[in-house]
Image (cartoon, rainbow, N blue to C red; front, side):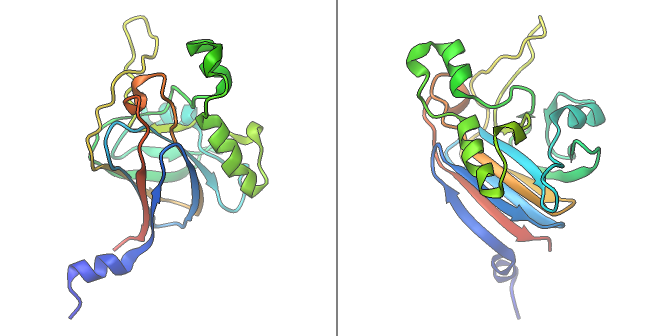
Length: 211
């Protein structure tokens, strides 16, 4: 008789470590579960979703926030596309809150925020550009993203603050695909603000069939 442990192992279709500062992408079919684990804690994971059959349909942070009526992403959040359709749903979350307003770091933003000495440091937008190019897309096809595990409180004056992360080693988020999607990740390389604890670390990504 097959025990639960063996069954769970059989369900895992992909199991990978994404190195610190690196990009990643993969296909998550409808009904499959994507799990992202912050292995060391305090590591922002910039994430995008595109419809697998037509990558012109993609994650929309604005529509997601409007539909949810919430400033943050957590269990129960429907990830909505620019076509107004639900692409995926957050079905488990041990961290409790994820940002989808602050966007991705870029070489240009680093220069403005942290000075010209940071101009050539690696950044999430460049990671995204490298990864989406595999699918024939360019920088103009990169919409505002989700920042899993990134702590971005809204201050009294309405501004966004990037502060120390709240995720602990082993914290995870699970997203169940509601359509076939391409997930694109930048394991954030930022070292100039506390979103990664000033020390980018690897993450763990897995895809499994729902039981």
